[in-house]
Length: 253
Image 1 (tube, rainbow, N blue to C red):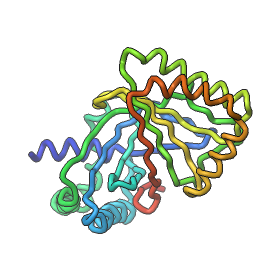
Image 2: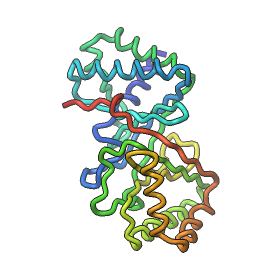
Image 3: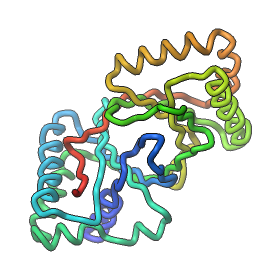
């Protein structure tokens, strides 16, 4: 059990030298580890208290060599996303510095307390797909912490057609000169199903909705045929609303 917990901590805390969604000017990693805690609603206050304690422990002890961004989802999920260059990076333990500063026992108590807040968690790899993402000149996700994630699942036999359909959507946005961008990610190791995830950023839910209306007006009714080429291939579709949580995230100075 101790080895299992250590492995999960490594997956959780490899996290985030950069934000999950970067501005166009910043170099975007293409491979990520995603760790998800499915927190029980009644335990969310305690979970956030411990997550904040962990962040403050790192701040106070000026821990280097690791950083992370926390994403909270409306259904109680807390998601930690970490850029990696290869699978071998999962063999390192970025928590070693903190353990030396505050002691393994104290660090263990924090994570054991977080364990009590959920009954399940998961890990997977996802990939950023720059060639399918639309980031027009002048567009940035900076200070836009609201997120709308669109998950499009599909059967493996339709992989080529799905990729071509996503490419046509990007081409349509470019042709129409849409000002609002989006990022596209694809499922990887650990995912039970194949999917594309489209990430839309905004300063608020209202701002995302207004941007969507502006995009629809610019794209026009003829865009529905292009969208349909992707939608008809999907086995299921999920829309998820979430927030980037700077208050629970750690970035060493």
